[in-house]
Image (cartoon, rainbow, N blue to C red):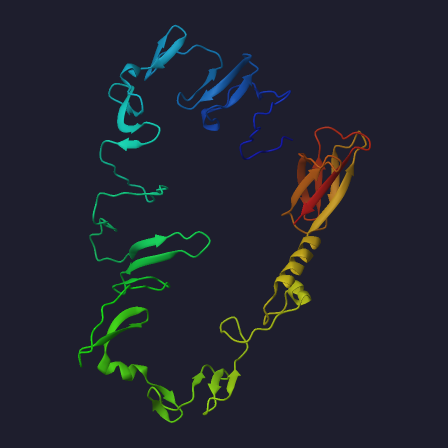
Length: 376
């Protein structure tokens, strides 16, 4: 049984020693072939490579014939119209004349220039430049909106390991918003001390509004021990939440009393921490865990979901049975040489939820030892 690789194998310029190209009696069908695929056709004893552009298998080493966009002379070939190519210009296909021609895009190795208009119709445009210069003095977002607007628009700043920040026009609320960041307005000019006209700024649900001074006192009043008290009035502070949750001071402000319910999955409150064993058991639903508890649970999980076994050769056995008892087919299996510590590639077949087989192409020699590790 061949080992199935589902990704490219990079040899990093190392040799493929004693390798052989796949032997076939007949060439593969085009629907099952990709460009560059090699086979050795044992019927006509030819090495062939598949060319998707031609939709056919070509014999390696055969001479080229003229085709669309290609000119052939003796055993050499060249691109048609190459005498008219300009250095640095990107080429484009001229379907009328069946050849490549210069496009309006040029690249001198330092700067890419587009001599015509650029229209991007995809959904994402990424610019990795550190400096972007625009000739426009107004940047238009959401261009093409012709109906009643529904989409928010603005800009977002990438901040690396810190949370990103945004400045967005909120189409639903009809205002600009910094989402959940502070907004620094800068230096605001003084309103002066003109009676009846001075105003202050405040916010309501994050929206900046202005307030006349004559109305400010009503906003700044608070609940005292005998009702509404103004600034400077003798009063105590009481913050009452859900039943059983309160923070309050005595009337004279000399004592602080805190009474808060236990935290739940739907409400904030006092938090209790689970022991390491409670974290491992995973049955405690009313306590938070700690880093040591998480570490203990991970260690316990790794120990209970791993199995290892030595495979010792006898010069005849090619399939070794491994009973791991992890009760699942979803296991990761690795075989390695305990002397060189190098990973060994062999076939692994899952027999059932507790058993698998490690199969070698040829039987390991007598006393040749390998180690198999199974993780769920």
